[in-house]
Length: 297
Ligand code: PLP
Image (cartoon, rainbow, N blue to C red; front, side):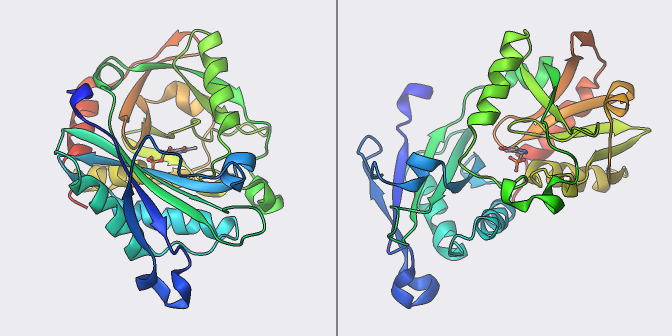
């Protein structure tokens, strides 16, 4: 039950490992209500940092290595020191092991540029029980299409815009979610200025189209989704073809089913696009979510 689970916080010590590599840094438990970040931290003042959110099902962090690889990829895109893989992995397990096992929790990893001028990053790991997403997973969500204002070539032409990195600068993503609410919808699918489907503010779009599973190409300036990757693995094992393609709103509208997929909420089927009802396969959605929950890596 929600109120019996107290969140856990671990703080990264010696982030640069005192020159001794991976083994030098470690995570220490801290009071989740304590102030652990300086008011001068660039993560706070500029949103200059990265994060990951990892689902924990029955005490098992899901797709952990995929999340840690993406964490390192985001760090590289922001020219941050590479986060020590094993240290962060131990931090995740230490957080999970510090609390009773629940059906669904999530761990958030945060890594910032630290206090301006210090050159020392700040990091922490936070564990919390997940909200109940049963309604979204079974009844579906309504979405609106919103123009992201960038072309699908943005990653190549303007890498400094950091499209495709999981940065702490999510104010735009949150604003888009509020715009969806203003329009009476639950969520958003961003479309590029040249007319291609991109992603949601916190999720990847997956379509079942012509009996295949398809998702937009990551070169279009979107985050490579760990949940989407797991779904493609589950689909392939079950005999489906999978593909990464440049997709348009017309593809979305003719899809047999479509989902916004992400860690924690998992696969949320899309039941309405810009006010128009869309079909989705409830049985297939249930099988996908069962497959995701059963992941052991
Ligand atoms: N795209 C964006 C912009 C996201 O923020 C997220 C997750 O938060 C995703 C896609 C889905 O990624 P994952 O499935 O790894 O959670």
